[in-house]
Amino acid sequence: MSQSAWSPSSWREKPIAQDVVYEDKDELNRVLGRLRKLPPLVSAKEIDALKEQLADVATGKAFLLQGGDCAELFDDCSTQPIEHKLSLVLLMSLIILHGSRLPVVRIMRIAGQYAKPRSKPTEIVDVEETEVVDGEALTRVVKKEVLSFRGDNVNGYEVADRRPDPERLLGAYFHSTATLNYIRTLLASGFANLHKPLDWSFSHVRSPELQAAFSAVIESLQDSLDFMKVSTGGDGGRERGGTETVNIFTSHEALLLEYEEAFTRASTAHATFSAPSTRPGTPSQSRSASRTRAGVESQAQAPAQPNQSQVLAAPKYYNLSSHFIWIGDRTRQIDGAHIEYFRGIANPIGIKVGPTMAPEELVRVLDIINPDRVAGKVTVIGRYGADKVDQYLPAHIDAVKQTDHVVVWQCDAMHGNTKTSQNDPTLKTRHFSDVIHEISRSLEIHRTKGTILGGVHLELTGEVNDEGYSVTECIGGSMELEDKDLSLNYRTHCDPRLNYEQSLVGLYADSKPLSPDVAFLIADNLKA
Ligand code: PEP
Ligand code: MN
Image (cartoon, rainbow, N blue to C red):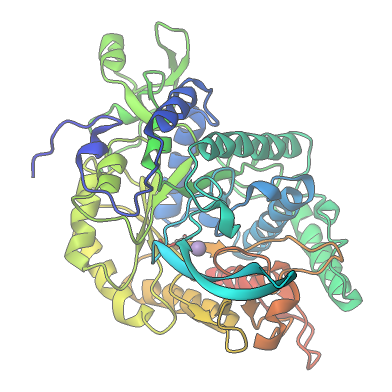
């Protein structure tokens, strides 16, 4: 199928799902003009490095851990929440690394994960109305239909604040920048030094038993880490998720294409994506550096000297707002605006795939968004649900196996498992056992098919409230949270997240010393 010419704005010619309608177009254009001038958050070089690491994930040489909030909030751009989220992902990755002996590629849903697709554009909410009757103020609760909350970069959660406001796009940029700046600061200052995991703020874990259990696990991990060297291609673990220090990559759902377009910048500095194709089985491109006329380090093919004018003549477009972006389950229409946008950018990208995706449609999408068959370029993020994964994943695997696409298979064990709380129908929840089931079944299905489950995609948070309690949004896990406990510390404005203990490890009430929570389950399975 021949494609028409791509440009960062060619998506505007296509039908768009989940569009945000702004009343004040002039204001929107003013904001977009400003965004186009602001400096990027990440570099093409970092993006290329991630893409190389994902090629290793695709072939089973590394494991991908992707996690974070369903939706970040501007208010959570603050010291402690960022530290807690980062420390949780670091510790999970350490457990996986220790158990599996595989380097772990860490991508967080952070520094830009603001926009949310919604199943309905409006919702009915309870609003208090006050009326003065005979000099007396009477307050009553009335039902009102309002626009749905679409994420902090679109509108506010407060009912009075639901009108989409372009200024929030600038807010998203500056909050993303502050968040990423703090992550980079922490990493540069040794926060992620994997030989000191006890420094990663466990103080908020309240139960003394749990504290003791964490310490025991960490001490044993440290002992082994002292002896362990993960093979990292001679860079001492710096770049490959080893034990010296780590890389954290950022990601978000690229939903608001106006915003994404503003950060889509041409780069002639990196020739990696200029090559016509990197088919599976062909030697990977040389990593030797050369210089373009601009004097910027580039990655070019060797031994043939790159023709500089060719490199410069064919710039690649990178989305420099994030290292990795994905297409949501609601916006992946073959002829739609999002697929059109994604087919032109050089970043590694994800595509959410659920029960409504026909196997042949998945192959068509892959053909469109990765015509050059670059290994690791596309991560297929399965989100079927614990009760559907057996029915749908095998056919998707079979369809892709019949092609020459080399994808990263990832299990999002959250989005097919969302339920309504029995005690409070206004709360969404997820059962920890469903999450575990979907991951275990995905691992097993890939094993039988001879393919590799390369990673997991989770909604999780290490955040705690002022009293130090973890969030209570998902049911079950080693804390044995029940439906009636959900309201104790339910904080998300969007989907329910695994808390610290559910993501890591905890104690069984029946005093078995340790029960496997997510990170341990993955480590054990990869070892098997
Ligand atoms: C999400 O990742 O928060 C999300 C909305 O997922 P999906 O597109 O798979 O429903
Ligand atoms: Mn979500």
